[in-house]
Every structure is written in structure tokens, then in C-alpha cells.
Amino acid sequence: MAFSVRLEGLQKRFGRGTRSVEAVRDLSLEIGEREFFTFVGPSGCGKTTTLRMIAGLETPTAGRIWFGDTDVTALPPQKRDIAMVFQDIALFPYMTVRDNIGYPLRIAGLPRAQVYEKVEKVAATLGLSDKLGQKPGQLSGGQQQRVAIGRAIIKEPKVLLMDEPLSALDARLRVEMRTEILRLHREISSTIIYVTHDQVEAMTMSTRVAVMDQGRALQVDPPRVIFRRPADMTVATFIGTPAMNIIPAGVVTMTGGLAIELLGRQIPVAPRHHAALQGLKRVEAGIRASTASGPPVKSMTWARRGMTTVPGWRAAAAQYAPCTGFGRTHVRAAPARRRSASTAVTTPASAPGPTSPPIPHAGGWQASQPPTPAIPRRRVSGSTNRRPSGSSYRTAPHQQPPRSIERMVRRASRDPAPATCVS
Image (cartoon, rainbow, N blue to C red; front, side):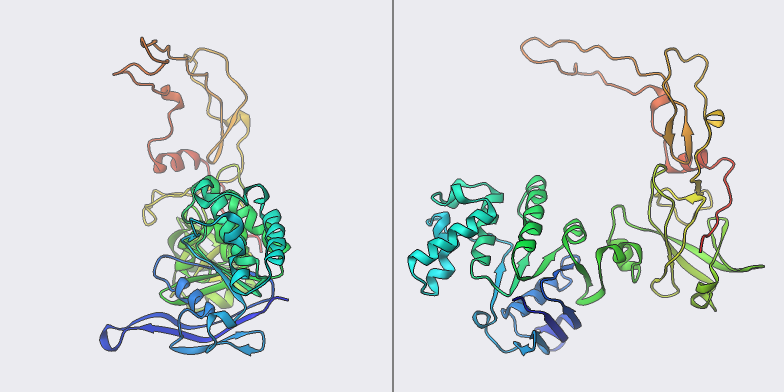
């Protein structure tokens, strides 16, 4: 049976006097049984130090650590019934896969037959049954990582700790190992605490995520909540690719109530959110970048100091393109509604060739242009076909992308519809 993990006022300070560094500051949270919990944040935020204190490799300066109803703050690592997968795979190069996986049981003094039986079972779970006789140097990076995970889970720990186990793998292997770890979590009865700086790993694998910065947990919530309703601007700009756009806005009073004045438009506020905006004149609006073919902006966040999330917003007639000049007046909202074929940008009469049905474009529909004529390639003697030196392949002028976000937004925002708010 897995343990729940509870941290109460956890602090960790390195050094003394004026040169001391506070790595973890007053961290309090609870991790449920068999939960996949992830600490995510930039380098130096304290996530690995927190994991090492849970493992017993670091002694907290203050605070308590509980496994279930047992205070394990002063217990050594070997008495906490945990296992840990480190960032460095750290396999014994002179041992076979069978011996590496079974090493913890051999140290515990189990009979050889019982060790091999458990090794076979773990190897079958991780897809390593045909690799047991090989040594780590004969395996790929993903297979070596599975061996390290197998060595950790063979003791059936109550808490499994993982410290950036996929950071040394390439992109393809990381995707494969994420799938393997999720499958493993469904099959074993352990609470998994995972540390990573990769937000993709945190958002796709976790039951809950703790976003950390400067030793503090800024927000602890399920991934969907963190993405849609970030607690402050640090979380909003860290989570998401591309990051959330932060745009200065104002609070104005209308006939029907309050409204957010953003990029020259007034977006009405639902009455149930008026209390959160009372007394505010200037706010910071956070808008997730969206594409023309995607849904409208689903939420907006604002605050005077930090960001206070107010759910229920929908800019039903406006989408905002990602840009950098937030304070400039020329950055405008592009209408989310699709333009009809009759109002689409027409193909120049002089352009030869057939046309295909209209294609979606930012802010509306754009008529398809004739295909670019193929540029012949010259065969180079003694090699395969490749581009001749000094030549360049250019896209036809009518198919080139807009020269700037400003021009794209301005072109897509002709005859814009007023933005509305659906409560």
C-alpha cells in the first residue's frame, strides 16, 4: 500500500550568516496515495532540494515530513521505504541487466532464486526480458533508463522519487519513456513524486503539479487548472508554449456594469466578477495565444499585484495573435468569426493557373493562390540531386508570409466585430 506524503513548513538553508542561501521557504503541501505529483520550475527553484529532503538525503532546517501518520523527518533513507531514480542513470557497467535490477534484493540478503524470480517479473513489465544477459554498454539510452527504473521498483517501495530521469535522453526517447512511466504508474502501487524543469513532462504526466520559484510553491493544482487559471504572472508566463501574453488594460464603468478596456475595446465583465475588480483602475490582462482555426480565448486573468484569476470569461468575437509590442496601439484584435467566400481576399486576375477552395487564414478566410511553379534542379556530377551553389528557392510573392505580426493583425482585423463577454 502506498503512502501519502505531507510536508509541513519545510525549510532548507545552506551556509551561515550573510552568505546563507535559502533553497526552500516554508513549503507546505500534501500528496495523496498513489498520486503522480510533479515539482516543476526553473533551475535553482528548490525542487531537487525538496525531493532530497523527502528521500532523507538532506536534513531540513525547519519543518516536518510525514509518510502517512509517521513522522520520518529524522529517519535515514534506508528506513523510509522509498526508492529513487536519479538524473544520472548510474548503472554498474560490469554487471548484467539481471544483476543491476536485482542488486537491491541481493544487498537485502534474499535467496538467489527469489531474486531472479522478481527480476524476471520486473523485466517483463519494462520490456527487458530479452536484455537480461547484456551489459549496460550494449543498451540504448532508453533501455538503460528502464533498467534504472526497474532497479528502483523491484523492492516495491511505498514512495518512488524521480529526479529528472529523462533529461539525458533525446526527444524521441523522452516521448517513449513518458509513456512507459505512465503505464508503470498504473501497474504499481506506489506514490510517485517527480521532479522536472520540462513543463511538457509535468503537464502530460501528472495528477497534480507544484510550480516552484525561489524556494516557494506558487501554485499546486491539476495541470488543466494551472494552464487555464494561473495564480500569478510567474506561473502564467512559465506554463504554456508560447507563453501567455501579458497586456496592460484598464477597468472602466459602463451602463451595464464594469468592463475591461483592452487594445481599444471594452469587454463587459459578468456581474459575479465585479467584486474582484472593485477599486482597480489598471490591471494586467493575460491572453493565451490561439490560432484562427482554434476556439476563441477562453479565459482572461487580471490583477493589481500579481494576477488574480477570474474564470468564466470568453471573448466570443475576438482572438489575439501572439506579439511582442503589447503597449502599442497598432496591435489589434483579430475577429474570430470566419469570413464568407464572397468577402475573402480575391486572387489577382493576372495570376495564372487554377485555384483551390479557400483556406483558413488568421482572422478570416483567404482565397487559395495558384501553386508555385516547380524550380528545376540541376544534377551535380558524382552526387545526388542537390541545390546548385549560388541558387536559392524562393516562395512566390503571393505565398510569402506577412512581413510582421503587425501587418498580419491589421490585415485580418478589417471590419472587426465588437468583442463580447459570455458569463
